[in-house]
Length: 174
Image 1 (cartoon, rainbow, N blue to C red):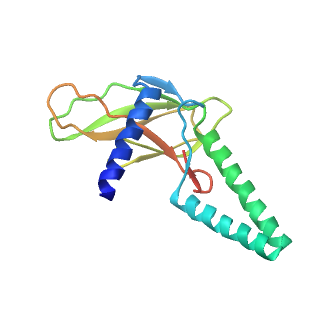
Image 2 (image 1 turned 120 degrees about the vertical axis):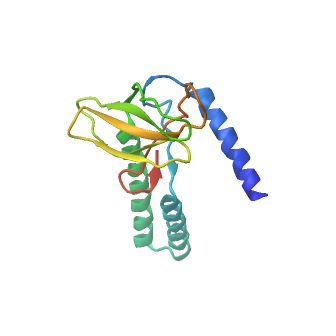
Image 3 (image 1 turned 30 degrees about the vertical axis):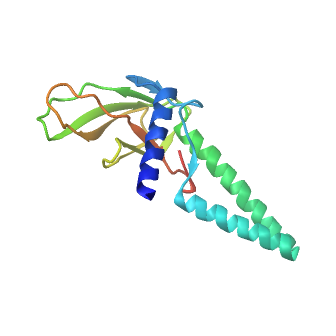
């Protein structure tokens, strides 16, 4: 029952994202297409933050209040830096080589950055496939190979590409 609920939630999430961001060959990431959620470590961090805050209220310990507020500010900064790591990143689809049915299709993605931005610890993958890691710091452009299974003959459409980062502390995922 839990897996059916999880699958239904996943399908509705994909539909919602497809409505907000239709497929295109070139996209620049910004406010409308970067989604930030807490990671598993971030959820544990928030749980411990809540426990510390409750203990600080219960025992009126000002040092515990200071620790709780410091943890909140670190979490907010992690959200801002995580967003800034993906902001203004441009992704462009490149021509892909031909493959045989049943093989891994290699899709080439060109990543471009603005002159004043750097992008670290990026993961690019299609759903249920291995991720390609890239850092875009020294160069303004980089070409990344992302793989998907070619399940049928003829021209295949690439699935929705997922660009993920856990930068800087691993508390949030964008």
